[in-house]
Length: 133
Image (cartoon, rainbow, N blue to C red; front, side, top):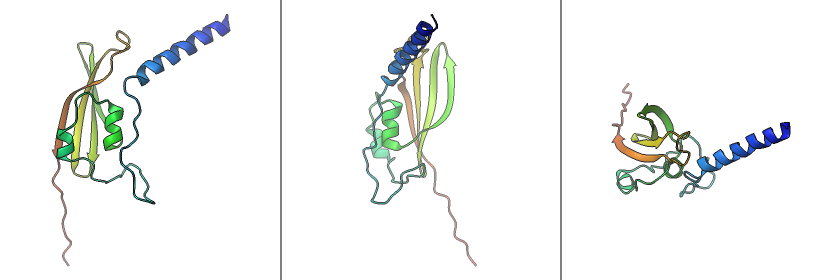
């Protein structure tokens, strides 16, 4: 009897992970580093521009955007009338893209995939000064 309960739990976990993975497959970066370059958190390759932001389709998933812009930073999550919305930030130097995704409660609708409801591009002014002796 214990084996069947464990098997049932394992099957439920596998099914739920397959449903979640189906909401946006992993995509590798479409850009390659220079020879000998290390890719990491501080990957300043100037990939966020106003031109490529304006041409983004609204049906992209979070993993698609992370494949283009690099790792996103989770900012906040809110729940209003059973709809979850999450804000993620992509930043490349002074250029910032804030993307809001929304989806229904996964317990009520397990096939609900996060959809982009708002995207905002902003650019911080470069702040710098020169030390004068």
